[in-house]
Amino acid sequence: MDDYAERLLDRDDVTSVEETVELEAEAYATTRDRARSIDGGVATVIRNDDGELLLVENDWSDGYVPPGGGVEPGEDPEAAAIREAEEETGVRVELERPVRVDRRRYEHANRDESFRGGYDVTYLAHPVGDQTLADDPGLADETIEDVAWFDALPERTPVPDLLERFLDARDDARPDR
Image 1 (cartoon, rainbow, N blue to C red):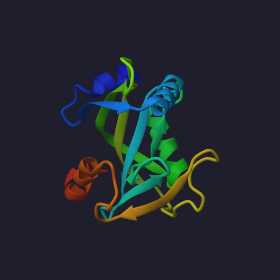
Image 2: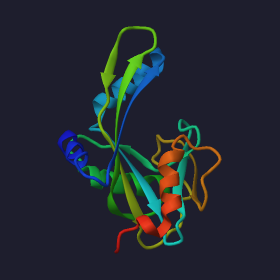
Image 3: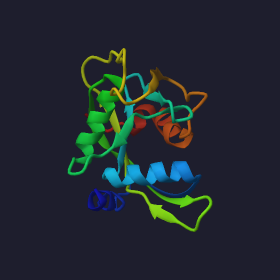
Image 4: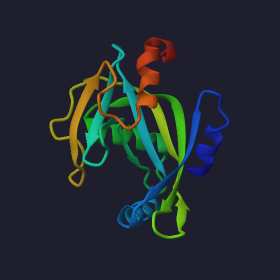
C-alpha cells in the first residue's frame, strides 16, 4: 500500500493531508494494534446522479463519514474500498478516482511515544445498480448506527472539508463516464 499511496501523492488531482493525533493510553494502544494488523485504510465518497452523498454513522465516528475501513494485508486498496462500501451500505460501487491521501502520526498523551500510521486513501465513486440501503449494515463485529443519502452537509460530521468539496462541485467534479 505504501508504494501505491506514494505514487498517488505525485498526482495533481489528489489532495495530501498529514496530521498528528494525540491519544490517551487506551485509544493509543488500540490504534497501534489496529495499525499493525492492516495495510492502511480506505474510504469511499459515494455520489449518486442526483449529487447526493452516501454516508455512514459508526459508533466511533462522531457523526457521518464516508464508508471505509482497513486494507487487509495483500489486498488491493481499490478492491478494499469497493468491499468496504458494499459491506457498510449494501450498495455496490464503481470507483472513479482517488481524491485524497491521509497520513497520521499518533502520539501517546502521557509518554514520549509515537508511531506513524499507514496511509489512508479516499476515493470518489458512484453506485452501480440498485441503490437500496442495507437493513443491517456492516459486518457482525461492526456497529454502524445509520446509513443515509445526503443532499446537504450533515449537521454532525468530523470531515466537513472533504464532504463539502463534493457537494459543492456536484457534476463539475464528476469525470465523464
